[in-house]
Length: 223
Image (cartoon, rainbow, N blue to C red; front, side):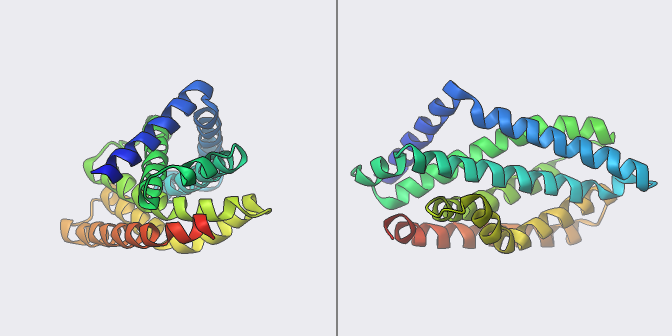
């Protein structure tokens, strides 16, 4: 119970800090909007049916925006000395990880809820379907779980902007592929049996990423 309470306190601290500056939300929103518009008009000029590319475009935007958010969050923690303060606090290291991971998940989810209506309007598609929202949620959980660990690791290096994508993209690639497949299957009207394979795949990877990251986080922050 103490672990959960401490994690929620860290989440609340991050939310209050972001509410005061609104720096991360504004930068992520502008970035996602630019990515969507560029993809939309680029493919409209070259592809007869751009809607076939929607799953890939959607997850490319989510992946780039999530990487931006993770990198910025970890960099601010290191630059402002918040990480040292958290390490000195009498709380388990698992609480710190859970708090940062939940905070990243919340930030990414709020940005996605803002992005999906814009995406739906530009491509004239209904993306607010239960399985698509489930794919977005499960993909974001996996991305935030391992991304919190790796962004903390990369934030302590000099080349943090380059290091995070190099570390993160190869590991989260299975999650992104599964999320793209699930999104495409829903839009194409695939059979339920085919869709459940990707749902189980995403859930399995989320559990693995969460457990491994939780077990190794203390070695990253104390190393």
